[in-house]
Image (cartoon, rainbow, N blue to C red; front, side):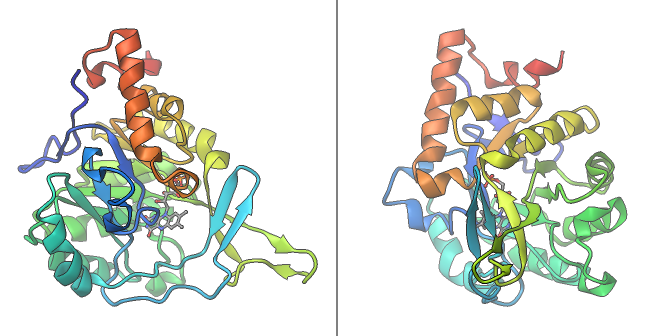
Length: 307
Ligand SMILES: Cc1cc2nc3c(=O)[nH]c(=O)nc-3n(C[C@H](O)[C@H](O)[C@H](O)COP(=O)(O)O)c2cc1C
């Protein structure tokens, strides 16, 4: 069976994965944390925690709250910063055969460009994932990814700053995700990831105050799966570049739904907190499904529900 997928077909280097399953940024650390639990090199790729120019301590506690079929987090991009990532993590990744994708974030357009520039030509890094769900501090704090123009601008500056393939991860917190996707594709994204978390909150009724230290957070987990699936279905009909589905994927059935909706690959996030082997279990479940259905090539499943 052939499960390999090319996620950057228009890019000179390309981004060829042995299979379509990878962890979602922020739920799998730097990959090193999980390597004692299972053979992470069996995954299609590893995606690391969101990385910024300077190290960040993140938001005030509490930063996690469980909800019905979901999780709300307000980690606030706690990370070691791009320099420590290059010095401490990349040398290790350079010895792995599984490609590593570095997720980046910024508070200004220039910060995205700088982080992307630092990562260019670093051994052990195969692609950049651009998180556009960050507040743009020069534009009153609206998420870059909320509107087509700032999302395209971030894409274009990152593209100009690196020779690596770039995957742009969109936010569902917009009224027009298809327009944002089209703008980002036109600005040079090699692939699109759908979706990041949905804005939400929860209240501690005993204290009569918001439970999270930063009031609101991002909802993830099974609760958001139908929303993410529909966004993948919609966007897959509007852009030509590969789509990576993400949002509530917990089982192989979930993953296959995203692939049939038009995703070329998928990411597993919150599910790893309950079952750290979830990405591998999902990969094995996809293989079993293909075997049972007599499908020899994953490409035959991509978009199968779109006809
Ligand atoms: C604790 C936590 C931290 C996250 N950190 C990041 C991050 O640093 N960068 C990013 O782009 N997405 C981040 N995400 C979003 C996930 O990558 C993913 O898009 C989202 O959780 C939906 O997928 P899921 O329902 O499978 O978790 C984070 C999610 C969680 C739960």
